[in-house]
Amino acid sequence: MNKTETMAEKIIQWSNINTGTFNILGLERLAKVLVEEFSILGGEGDILSLPPIEQIDSLGEIEKKDIGPLLRFWKRPNAPLQVLLVAHMDTVYGLEHAFQKATKKNAERVCGPGVTDMKGGICVMLEALKAFEKTPNANKLGWEVLITPDEEIGSLASGPYLAERAKFHQVGLVFEPAMDEQGTLASERKGSGHFTIVLHGRAAHAGRAFHEGKNAIVALSDVIKEIAALNGQHEGVTLNVGFVHGGGPVNVVPDFALCRLDVRLQKIEDEQWVQEQLESIIGQYQQREGYRVTLKGGIHRKPKFLTGKTKELYELVKKIGEELGQTITWTPSGGCCDGNNLAALGLPNVDSLGVCGGKIHSEEEYMLVNSLVPRVELTTAILTRLSENASTGIT
Image (cartoon, rainbow, N blue to C red; front, side, top):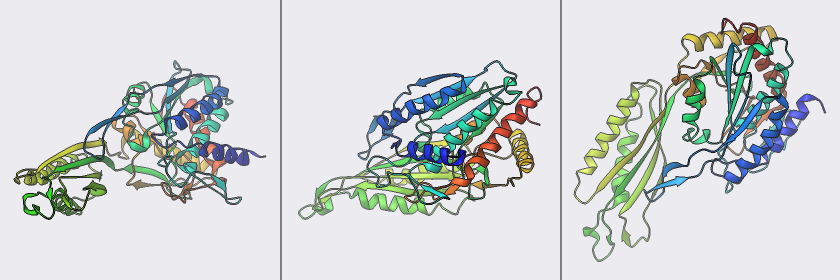
């Protein structure tokens, strides 16, 4: 098999290991595979345990959830220039999901859970590092790889570790998939947050004592309408009610209901506006007799902006692409990733150097096989150029 075929087969094998964020056994299984794969680079490595995270369960209670291991590989930590390469091995497809198997549809496409987001990206990173290690100036650049197990839920456990390691680097490279089949990079990214609203009412017999009850589902429906009405009031801010739970036997006035929100925003100052609006809505219903409402959660990823050193890095990648015969463009994205985290820490980064494909987070997720080698060549060339200019940084 040629290099493209070898990479495609490897990605299929990795994607056939279920690594939904909370499938700890699957994440541990893939971690062992990746430790062996990255050992060929001749650096050092470690498997790190992360603390459990706290989440609000469907009954409104705090529960602790275990998180899989974080992988760290590094080489030449004392070199003049340090680059942090970041990927994630978790996917949105848990063990209960119908989408479990990766297959090669034809010579051009591989379909499967996580082939693009982002096991393909891990493979691109690995092959690029292999190629870079053979270049004459490799000794001038130190690199560190972090492969996280929880990016799909906001890097809640791995985020603090990313923040700690980012301090030691001058450049970040993140291997999220490209924006489209042409390899377009994500430039600016929205920030994001998750909120949970828990509403308690008063239970009562639906026939004998209906008017003694306080229907939590109806009240929460009113809350949701007011939240939905916030959309369009601030440019770039969206609030999506993505989950609702409540009630039980239909002959009981329900005393409990819960909903979860996904919030996206493109300006840092929008965080305060969102918080104030939600608290104002909740406050109104909190004052209703017989009801108790709580708001939990917050914004956990800041927006990423294309300015300063980050813009310089994108321009460098564009120039390198031209030298390789690749047209590199970029466009804003409403999605978030660890590139947001790194940018908020002041680390310039390009965060969509992974494979080309599409329909991520769906049962039609696919990867373009012919994008594999070009993306490896691009990252290899970026690392090579950085190593050649190690004393001056991004040039």
